[in-house]
Image 1: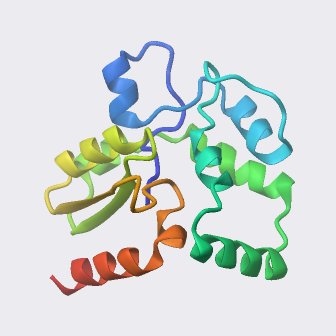
Image 2: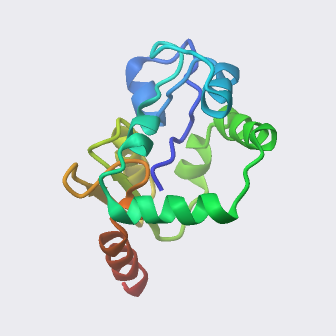
Length: 161
């Protein structure tokens, strides 16, 4: 679901390696602080485009799901930061290339710069299906909340095949 394969972009990677892996930060610590505490950063250190998608409240489905979640789920930024750091520090390219041997549905969209690594993922997993949503289809990091009818239909189609 629009997840980078390796959030941390290593300094010795080529630009193509970064795009294939989805690297979006050169500092997991700064990324965690920006997402959990709102600390300042810049686009050379952390790509904050996922937050741009979060701030787009043009989908009534998304507004509804966020209101519901905020009413019942109380997040702890400290623990969220620990999970996010672990997530950011992992590089899953070897697992995706050599260990995944089941059908995989991959969802991403044009409204995210994560799409190149989702395409790479689909190219290395033998039975993967990439669903790339357009901007008009709310194709960002939150596409399943913003366009739940399309997402549910696509997921059901995948599961039924």
